[in-house]
Structure formats: C-alpha cells, structure tokens
Amino acid sequence: MFETPICRLLGLDYPIFQGGMAYLGTAELAAAVSEAGGLGIIGSGNCGPDWVRSQIRKVRTKTARPFGVNVMLLSPFAAEVMEVVIAEKVPVVTTGAGNPGPHIPRLKEAGIKVIPVVAAVSLAKRVERAGADAVIAEGMESGGHIGELTTMALVPQVVDAVTVAVIAGGGIADGRGFLAALALGAQGVQMGTRFVCSEECVAHPAYKRAICEAGDRDTIVTGRRTGHPVRSLRNKFSREYERREEAGESPEELDRLGIGRYRAACLDGDVDNGTVLAGQVAGLISDILPAAEIVRRTIREAAEVAGRLSFLGRSAHAPTAQ
Ligand code: TUI
Image 1 (cartoon, rainbow, N blue to C red):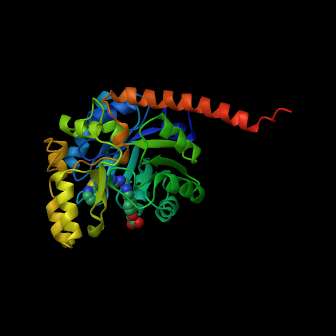
Image 2: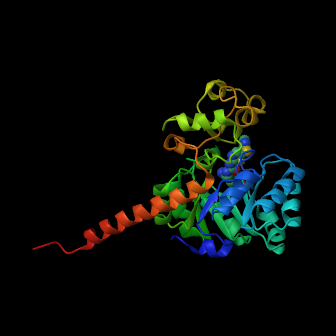
Image 3: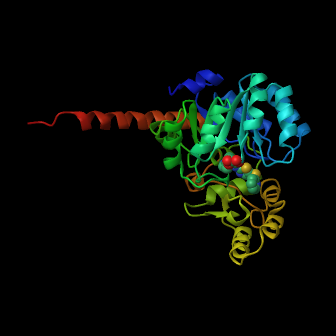
C-alpha cells in the first residue's frame, strides 16, 4: 500500500524518509528505518569525513536495504563529506541548509540519487535543472533550520513547479500527516522529530522526554537576526536567546551564544541550557517506539484514514435521494 513511484526509484517498501538529523541520525537509526522498508538517513551535520565514512560502513553491516546520507551544506566539512559519499557510493544523498547545485553532477556520475531539501519553489526549480532526482519540500513546522512557508502552502506549489517527485517534510508525525501530504501531491514524507522519539535514536533520554512532554505551542523560532532561523523547544536557553535577540545583540554575539548548545542537549541531556531542536509536531508525540513500529503505524493509520475519506468522497458524489 502507498507504493508511489519514489519507492521504485529508490527501492523502498514505503515512501517514508527519516530526516537526516545531526548527531541523531546515526547508523543505528538509519539502519532500523531502512530495514523497516523506509529510507534511513545518516545526518552528517557538522561532523567530519571520517565519522561519516564509519557510519556508512556501519549501516552496511546492519542492512542491505537502501539508505541515505544528509549533507548539511553550512558545515565546514560539506565538501569533504561529499567526497566520502561519492567514494562510498551511497545510494541516496539528501542536502540541507543551502543550494547543492554545484555538487550534483559529480554525485550523479557516481550513480547516487540526489534529493535536496528545499524551502521554496525557486530552489526546487534550480536543483531540478541541475539534475536532482526528487526534492524534499520542508515547511517551517519542522525542527532545526527552517524556511518561511508552511508545509500546506509549500508542497503543492513545489509539486506544480517541478516534474520530479516531491517528498513532504515538516509537521508530519503520523498516518494523518502522511495521507495529507499525498493529497497535496507529494509522493512520500520525511519525518524527523517522530524518529527522534524512537528506541534506536541515540538522543539522550532527557531530550526524548522533553519532546514527549511538549505541547502544541512549546516550540519557538530563534536566530532570524542571524539569517539562520532555527526551531527548537522553548526552554531557559531559548528564552534567554530570544531576549538578547530582541535587545538587538549582533548576529556574531548571538552565533557565539549558540555554540555547543545542540550537542549539550542531544548528547548530554542538558535540556534547559541546550538547544532541543524539534518540530511543531512535538505536541503530537508522547511515546518512544521502535523505528520499525513508527513506519508500520504510519502506514496503517494512513490506510485507515484513506478508507474513511474514500467513503466520504463516495457519499459526497452520490445523487441525493428524491
Ligand atoms: O537543514 C535543515 N535542518 C537543519 S540544518 C541544522 S544545523 C544548523 N544549525 C544552526 C544554523 C543553521 C543550521 C539544523 N537543522 N533542514 C533542511 C532545510 N534546508 N530547511 C531549510 C533549508 C533551506 C533553506 C534555505 C535550504 C536552502 C535554502 O536556500 C539556499 C539558497 O541558496 O537558496
């Protein structure tokens, strides 16, 4: 069920991508998602080429299914990580936080499927021209670095603007979101925050707990002044950052304030003084599940919703009695 063309293109059972999250998208999580029939993705973040190579090799010891590597283009190691993914011939590369255009020809020559994350129609068109195989249209509901548009507005506009497959990301954590994304014209979804709250994710237990306890209005966007808006859970640090941002502190000072905060939250569990990157769906998530169960449940729920909607559709079109 829900076998869309992207499944055949990439060799997936289900069109469910795991977001390529820095520190949290490790070999364990990526392998579990891929083994369950989705697309697991190693998040390279700001990590160096040796770490990425070792994670790629680790995934290959755990699963023979296709997987991906996310290259975060603001990373000082982005070019070196590109060399590693090419040398290792990973099946799929996704990119984030920038325009991967210049890298696309070499990735394609290596037989790698390239699927950039875009937050606007303009970049979607540019990467399609440069040879991207599909795009992930990520709305500002998502955690981490975000654009300006919501998923509901962005996805259909990207669908109309390109001919390659579109995967929807941002604001999706269950089968309802999955089916809504398909209704918008997407061929699949990317989920990040939902997979943070999986058993295989290496996030500190306090990080997962903070997401499970969050409500609908518990995320905040900071960093608009620095040019890199980031969504995270509201906490002591984000409030302090917001206060300093509103007081007009310089982007340099603000950038300095943020150094090491994400690592502190996700690896050391300092969820008060660290940055807990999470999407608006944090309020929808209240349990930690095996990654395979997240994939299965999403598909099962989507099938149930599709059944209900098709029934509604039939009654809407039925001729009225008398
Ligand atoms: O990249 C992400 N999410 C991330 S990256 C990250 S690490 C980071 N930390 C602090 C500041 C900045 C980054 C944490 N979370 N998602 C994919 C994504 N890409 N969202 C939005 C974009 C995006 C935005 C603008 C992609 C391209 C773009 O414009 C590029 C251009 O040149 O037009």
